[in-house]
Image 1 (tube, rainbow, N blue to C red):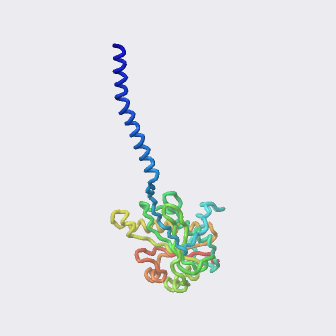
Image 2: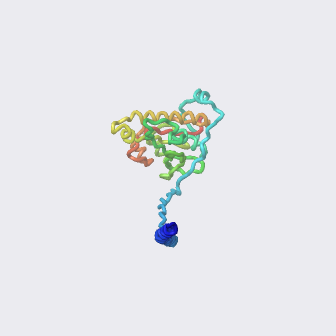
Image 3: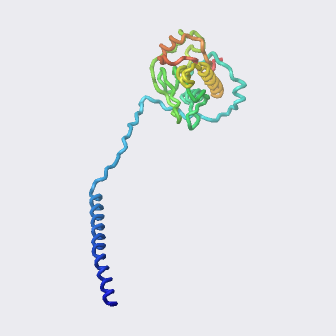
Length: 260
């Protein structure tokens, strides 16, 4: 009886063992086949489309601004005055770099500039008329401060000597052959858009005033001078200097070594 029971158990194991073994062999075979198939199959690689970087060969990098000087802010404030007469002596590119940085240079990692802007709109665009500046052809340049990161560059726009014509249009002594003139412009529409379509021109003009004040202080620190001129024929100046129509020309700021 005992032998009969053992025989039955053996047959049961044999009966179930055969299909189980077969099943395992089939699974292993299929797995190996799938592995070999995937191995031989070339994977599809998603190659990111690179956006070609466009570099304007005309862009002029400016010298890195200096953040320290031998002058305290109190000493500069004490002598700060508008200057109305300038020597025609050449200004260095370093001096121009420092003046443009003081006007609208990027100074934070989120794009903040040397002048605070309502709602971080930054509606001002600064141009340079180079008349006698080291390494620069005579003509009009746009200052490129940068967006989030500093760019601190000049973009040439229009070559030519416009000093005599500019003086004839404005007819003010500081514009009689200055080595350089910074043109401060503002986009009134851009500021209005920041306020939901409601005009806020005052904010643009206040920002331009702060920019001019920065330039006054920076000029005194560099031992040169400047003056902000606001009374002139804007349309004729716009035509001469090719300033875009959407920008309001707020100040002309000639600069140079002070004429005694």
